[in-house]
Image 1 (cartoon, rainbow, N blue to C red):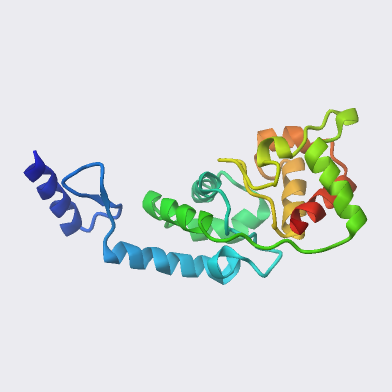
Image 2: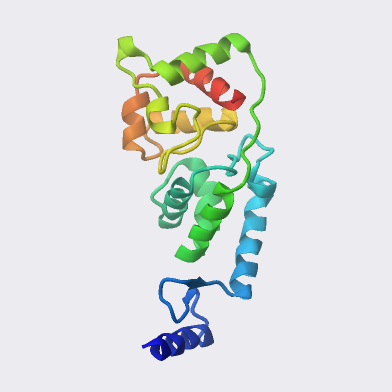
Length: 211
């Protein structure tokens, strides 16, 4: 049986099998030098927009550093499948994600999730305080749920719910608006934010960028 696994693994490598090959023990994954180099090249390509190690310097492109791995995987698959159809996704990410396979998507998610997150930025103290209140408490009088319920008390992200802490405020505001206007499919988020005013959104994203 062990010989069978070894021969199978050797054959997969010999024919250039793109995903991670398995060793004689099927529970152990083996990553070749070529696969590591390919992943490194892809990470560097991502860095041209998202910054070194995923800490973006442009508000157009989100920070990926410390983002949750499940969320990164979900979004990369959505870009590849063209099911995330907001304008920026079409302009930038559909083409970039089209050639990614499952192994590279998983590798990117793991890498960026393990990088130190971007530091918060100072801003308008009064606006930040208003945003914190909405994030922590929601807007009870309008039955708007607290953001912290899904995104974590420190906006650190929980599984498929993304990290928002330290994210660029302009990027977050744009995403809130495209979700609210159903240009990006996100049923859970749309239900939560559909009644948020733009002023409330501006306060929330100012708070998130600050932490």
